[in-house]
Image (cartoon, rainbow, N blue to C red; front, side, top):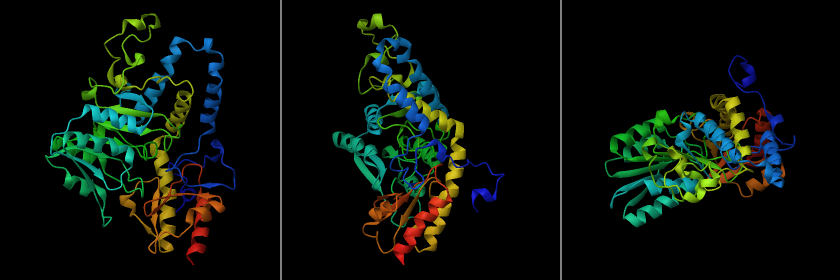
Length: 388
């Protein structure tokens, strides 16, 4: 059943008018990079000219927009603003976590097979330096990640580093269950939610991770080179990976900066990247988060699930392989080809102005609120012709 068949359900109507997407373009590739909202582009356009007249950039401007944006992000995950740091990339957030967690020789760091490298490489280096083990869990039967992860966590596990969905095919992990098991075993939990936050509801109260990281350029609809780090309050006295003036106490007093304050700003602000104010990108992130709050993540998730359920059903009808509905996230579908990935598939689709991506042995189809059922029809018209 399509959304229009049930008008009483709380779904978001087509929002294509809020994006710069020509009618002939079928963009089903949010997993790769989201299109930019017009409101975000406008915020960036205004920011571009801001420094032409630097006398109009005042001391409060270094702090107020950053704090307002920090507050918006905290609201998405049921955290406090003081739990949030401003970072430039997922790898930066992982580096903070690495610096503030410990592993004993012989202990284990658990990850998923073919997990995204930003939440892998730092842990590999940590294990090398401390004679620990990195363990990559596999799910060869596609039976589901959650039970595999739960079974692997034991008293020798020091750190569990995970996403919410596997980036290649969208297979979902029950993070509240994982968080509970980590606490029982005394293991730290570090999450990279770049491939899900903004499309799947998430609460730090339910999961209780040690650290959670998300870049903004995918499902948060923001620009590249911006992100956020959540740090559990027990880590608020930790060590940052860099030392800069704005993360220190009383940094609002520019006349006193040469006193070299030893104390930090409260909470996770000590982990903020230098030049966090970012007069160009911060307004864009702020505009994107405002729109997500206006839509509400639960409604985004429900709306996208209607689209991905239709995509999955159509794929099965023509003999393709998809993850079962109860094992995948609501926002994208990994489609497998039993006879192997057709050669030149992406090029063929792009010729028809249809855009998806391939990761591993999956074709990722990842719609957003600018897509409708006509886009799905267009995709499967090409796939059906290709496979017959």
